[in-house]
Image (cartoon, rainbow, N blue to C red; front, side, top):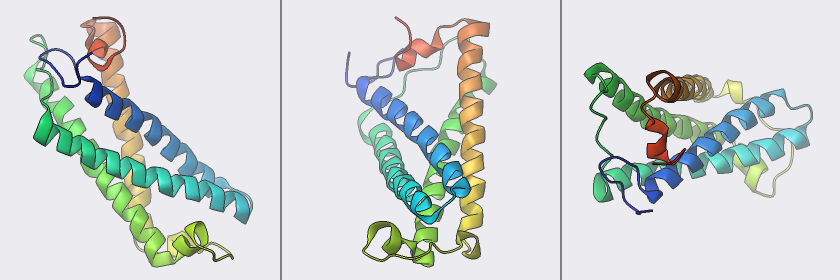
Length: 179
């Protein structure tokens, strides 16, 4: 398999970044919800530690994806049978993903920084976690998290629509199935 994409399929680097990001986003959503529901300070600290580290990794991977597309690779062409409105919608969802992930990470980092929770999560300080809701970036962080859930659902629905309704074997471009 080629490192870079060709006219019909994504290359190994693009596929790896896509699937690693996808699994990390699922872990982020799950750990965010688990942290809110955690009973006990120790459990919440461990979950939030995972959540924060994974969030920074997703941010870094997203920046690398953008740089990869701008500097090193080109996406495969849209299929001939894809209507223009669907192409525009697909590209819009991808750009929205990049923007929302960057805003999500930024609001998460700002919440940790402003609340002082970083010293509890990653330093030697102990004690109760702050009430994150008391800090301005927490509200947008929750909004961007739910926006990510919506984008993920839309993205999966579109992929399944292509695979099972249109039957254009679009998922093969990302390594699912055989070409």
